[in-house]
Length: 88
Image 1 (cartoon, rainbow, N blue to C red):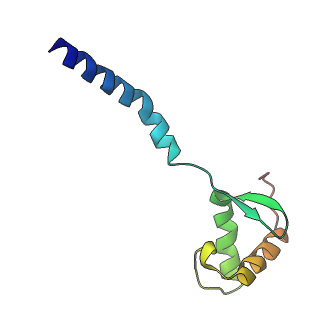
Image 2: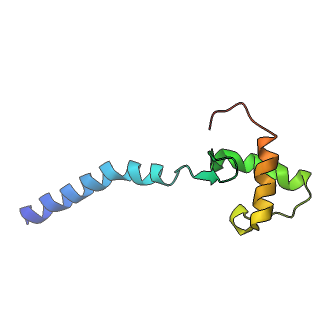
Image 3: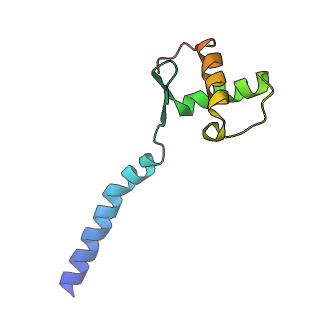
């Protein structure tokens, strides 16, 4: 019985120590490569600009990955004409 209690305590301790890693793993940053300008953009920050592009260019909302290559290029062209002050 002591062996079982000691192992359960070890498992609980391991779960407590690993849980912060599991929680922060959900907040992973997604980097997207822009093949036209040969640079990377952090998509968690990029969504603000992508939504702005959709509004300004009257495109219906759609996931970027589902857009045609021509529309993706239009976005990257627009994006590089609307730089932000943050470093990517």
